[in-house]
Length: 368
Ligand SMILES: [Zn+2]
Image (cartoon, rainbow, N blue to C red; front, side, top):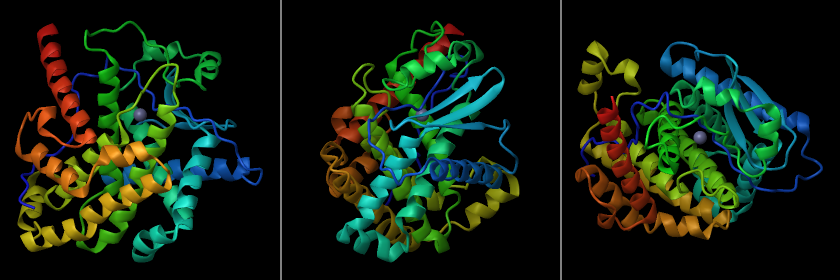
């Protein structure tokens, strides 16, 4: 598609001491009686195990801390990454697994979706639920991996306090800000950062033999982003804690478009591996075919999922395929493009976060 290799990744440097992070959202749902706690626990445990295995697969080493998983019997959709002393803990509610299964169940009950997505990929609701939960676990692992919380702030998150806050907001109370840019935008930015790294790990290296599998993984991620937005929008007390799903999907598909050109991960981006990678870049024809058979369908998968979820605001934020991919091109070709230069809501929020990131980095440099 004639794009330069400018990744849509949003990162904030120098965040380690600033941030304690949670991926937390609240959404009240009613569990069906048949949804057994033991099944849910097993689903979440399997997702975490697979996420950790994927970490080893891509990084060549085990995740530096062994996370404990607490599955909490709560119908609200929320997941929390936290440090408990020197222990890293992921807590996730039963409602998280239930809502994920429920969205995929509805999607595959829709004949049009089965035809457009289920048939070509061979996926089913159970498989897609599992992959969505794996990505959620990877997202939480990456908050820890990137140092998105510090010990001081975590000490304040007593169990009691967390349980009191859970239904409203699952972000722990912070220690005093250490930088002047420790704001709501920072929270959105670090979510984008955790998204990117989790996504890169789940999608893994580009392979011409994995197009259909890749499409399923992208859809699994899009679905989780939508579930979080839906839950976040019901978060009346503390406001939105995560970027729009469309903004996150904008970054996601921006990454997918680049995949044929990118090394799988930093570990293979050096020395002879790097040279080997450059020698084996796919042809232009293959890249165009990839865009037509994976990237564009992935956009329509997201639109279909938003429709199944009756998430009209997400459909609106994504915009038309033409506008969405036009915005992807603008983001890649025009460094520092302002939000006025984008058409879709997701791209506009993405560009304003880029501006914020650049400003934060500048401030950080001045403070050091
Ligand atoms: Zn998060």
